[in-house]
Length: 284
Length: 220
Image (tube, rainbow over the protein chains, first blue to last red):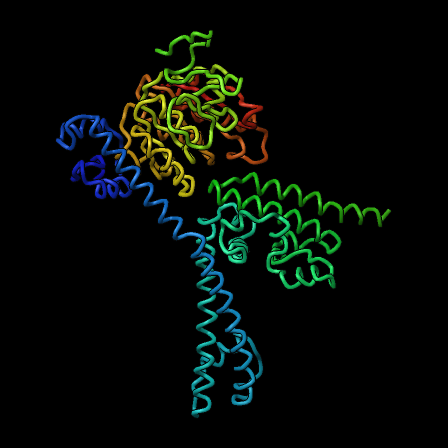
């Protein structure tokens, strides 16, 4: 329907069909749709046409926005938790397998790669049959984790474009999951974002027998992990601050703001310059 | 232009339906309609916050925008509907295109009480996805999209505009180039716009809207 208006094949009173046309339709070029709608008998006059258009647009946009949100952060939370569960279970079973298969096959090794090798064997005894079958499960779980990760990588930028760009899709999804959703992450102060995932250490600190944790899962961010230990606290604070802002922009506006990344890059350059200054100081 | 000179000595650039009113002792621009974002309301007039709305800031400064009142408008980058709700208060049929689902929900809420406001969840870079809804020959094409390629967006949407219509665009430098000098970035965008339009005015929008340039142009 590249030459038709949204109202073609639709009754003025049928908002559902109109809304579907508004969502799915296309045209190569605009036209004087109000006049055409009156000519074609869709509406007796332009006023009636605009009323029908208003209803169709409101319904179409409301439905599409709701669907997009429903498909959003909660799906991401489930996916990243399932990914972690699959990976953890695969590693646990792989350990069990390496004990068992190591004795049966006179082979050494561990982990998912070892499970892959065992899964390819032809079992010759009932004992071997069980071990090889278990190896197959380990491989399946590891593959599922990889598929889930790929899914998280495509979903996270849609759900939280700024957070995903700044933290990377997987860390973004973990932060959303730890907070319980994008909205609750957006409402957390940056100090909380900084220690999300380090709750045990945080409560030990609050009970008074440990120092405060410098970072939670944001440790996996290159800007934290890749900064020398002396400056890691500053780096964690800077990263958490910008991630908290990114989450708020993603939740309240949803627009991509590349300048946020640039601000973090700038701040990190300053923090990392300290290490260079110290080195120069040592030389001199 | 049909903009009426204001009794209080206004500059005549204000469209019909936009008036300076007094709120809590301050003169502010206002339009008549249902409140949308918690703005002050008095006798049915809603204050138009120039700090939250680039168009509000332009009108407040007396920039000639081509809006006359009662116009047919295509508004690209409607976001949550703050500005477009004011536009729909004084304009005629107003098509509001927004790409992000979350603000679109607020936009729908603003549209519910405004029968002449048509919200569309579409990508302004792909006019073919809404050319079956938006009519041709609109009087004003207003653009406030924070995406790379803002000049291209203006050119691709030229097809909706009447030959004697107006393009009013606010260009955000940091959406095009995060680090480069803003003047250079603005130069590139204006150059792109000039392939389809004759530029009438450009004006920096500091300090209310930093790193933004307002461009008013007519189709070639």
